[in-house]
Length: 299
Image (cartoon, rainbow, N blue to C red; front, side):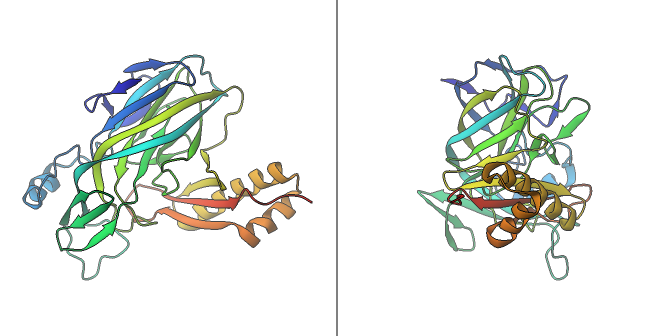
C-alpha cells in the first residue's frame, strides 16, 4: 500500500502542480495530513503568533497531488474512504471577522482538544464522541487554481459530514491523471462549521481510488450504503441549496426513472438538505449537501 507523507502537501488544486505519487485505478493509498494550521497551533499560547502570520491561502493542506493512471478529462474518480485515523491533539477556534456569530464572541480564541479513544476531551472539561470526517477532497480544475481554503466544482474544501468512513465520493476529472488531493481532517464538525472550524486535527486517511470512464459529474456527489448525496455551493446559502437540490433531483430522476417534476417532489418528500459550511468567511462560498435514501424503489 502506498503512502503520502505529511510534508507532501498542496494548498491549491492546479493542473501545473507536479504529482507526488502515481497509482493505478483500484489501488488503496494512505494519505497523511496536517491540520488546517499546518500544525502551527499546538497550544493556546500559539494563537497570537498564528493569527499575526496566517496566510488565508495556505490553510487546509491536503496530501498530494496523486496522478491516477488512465484518468482523462470526462472521466470520474470514485474515492472510497476506508479509514480515518486521528492524531492526539486538535483545536476549535474563532478568528476576527469570521463566523456566523460576531456579537459577544471573543474575536480570536481557541480551545484545545485531545483524543481519548472514540471520545474528544475539550480543555473546558467537556467530552464529546468523535465524529471523524474529511474536509478536502478534490481534483485539479482544467484552468487556474482552486485553493484548499475554498470549495469548487471539482471538490476541494467541501466540509461535508457525509464524507466519512464508508462513503464513496465521485469527483470529475478535468486534466490527465486527475491530480487528486485529500486532507483537512476533523475529529468532529457541526453541520455549518459556524465558527469557521470544526475540531481541526492532523491524521491520516485510507482511501481506495477507482476510475469510471466517461462518467464525470458536473460537481462532486457521494454515495453511502444508505443514501445518494448531491452537493452545491454558492455565495449565499440560498444559491447553494438550489444547486444541491437541483443535482439531487437529477440523481433521483435517473435512479428511479422519473420526470424532473416527479423527482423534485420526491426530494421534497424525503430528501434532507444539510449545511456543509456557512461561517460567512469572506470570499468563501457556502456549501450544502442533500441526501435521499437508496431504499426508495419503483413498484
